[in-house]
Amino acid sequence: MESSIQPLQKMRRYFESGATQPYAFRKQMLEALRNAITQYEDELMQALYADLKKNKEESWVTEIGFVQAEIRHALKHVHRWMKPQKVATNLLNFPGKSFVYKEPLGVVLIIGPWNYPLQLLFAPLVGAIAAGNCVVLKPSEFATATAAVMKRLIKQIFAPEYILCVEGEGAQVVPDLMNNFRFDHVFYTGSTAVGKAVYEMAAKQLVPVTLELGGKSPCVVESDADLKVAARRIALTKFSNAGQMCVAPDYVLVHRSAKDVFVRELISAIKRFFSEEPSSNYNYGKIINERAFNRLIKYMEQGRVIYGGKTDMSLHYIEPTLLDDVPLDATVMGEEIFGPVLTVLSFENFDEAKSIINRNSNPLAFYVFTSNKEKEERWLREVPFGGGCVNNASWHLTNFNLPFGGRGASGIGAYHGEYSFAVFSHQKAVMKTPTWFDPAVKYPPFEGKLKLFKKIIR
Ligand code: NAD
Image 1 (cartoon, rainbow, N blue to C red):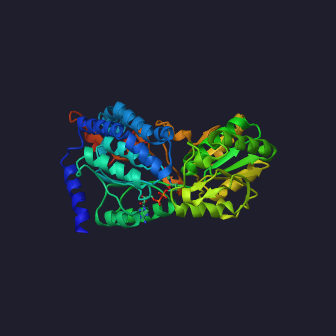
Image 2: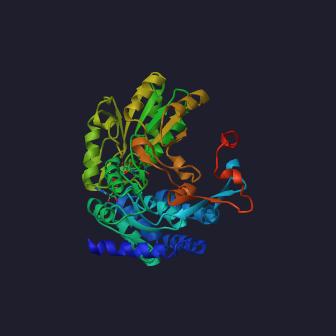
Image 3: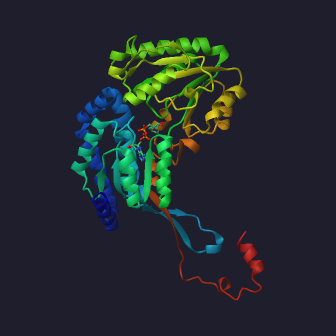
């Protein structure tokens, strides 16, 4: 174990030297990352195509451009984020002044999944650099082409004692790292099952964690929704990246009276976006590997296929597929689908729909399509969820002013923009008290001062 720990000890020493803390350093490193991503853009696009058949436009919007926008946002604001923030001081501490200092955490570990292999590793990295940390990056072993390019990119621009990319099988590499070194924070994106294992390892050394997990994200379509727009927006994000998106609509609950029209619109949107033959369509992706493919095939057997259903293992291809007549106790209604299979259920009233959603509580995302403000508010208030949209799906994650994360089984903590900076910073409370005012009343003997204390401290 000695060999894999030595580089981490070097990182610890590098962090303790203070080298990562000055604003000029953070800015320079963010700029280096931005320039390297530009330099590697073609290679990254080729790798994303090899791993997931992502086209260039999708790769830009959801991966490369997404990270570049995070960097741009951080470069614009990091100087302000770093400044100690002055807060009010209470009467008891008059004439003191109070501040929140933003202190880097130290050496942090970022573990990424394979579905957005660049975005989900590098977006948290931007926050960690902006906050002044040293970082170990662990990309997923399943998006191998993208992981290889990212590793080269990181090695080219960053010293290994500052940012280190470690490849390998997660079940082996991550415990080796976490059980033999105390990280100051672990930022994990991936499945809930592995998230629990990471949390357990972190708990042994009281390491704080951010867990960006999965879950079943429902989509409610009310009878008063603009059904054409709802269908287009749901089809776009459900079948983008062949449904392998953590915030993709997992299933649709459509009002019974609108179901037929909605399904017709959904099918027409799918055909327009991906053609009648998505297997060879530029806009349509592929399933990451055989294991995921076989899991999805099983789900397709649990209901009546009303659209799609074609598959080809040699291409890792599953057609955009709509399922009807799915029993609520089927596994496809209990597990996250994470693929291009969409279950369409109908409901009669609010309570019926809510009880279906409650079977898998605290989804990562929730979407409601309606033109009625009261229904909109009721849904937003009564369903606990990580983040979501009204009359849209998944796009909330592209606004850096919103925190992105889950709750309950879908995650712990949130990031993006300033929230990422906060994840990788300690908020250090500091009170500065001048010496010119030092009344005797604060000191013993206390006898007889209770009335005064009651006045000051309430
Ligand atoms: P995964 O849990 O299999 O792997 C994620 C990472 O964990 C990989 O880097 C892997 O190497 C590592 N890992 C695997 N086994 C490990 C172990 N035993 N101990 C420690 N680390 C281990 O997840 P995945 O299949 O790559 O991603 C799919 C899941 O991720 C879905 O559930 C999806 O919803 C979720 N996800 C969530 C978000 C989000 O932002 N909330 C984003 C993308 C994906």
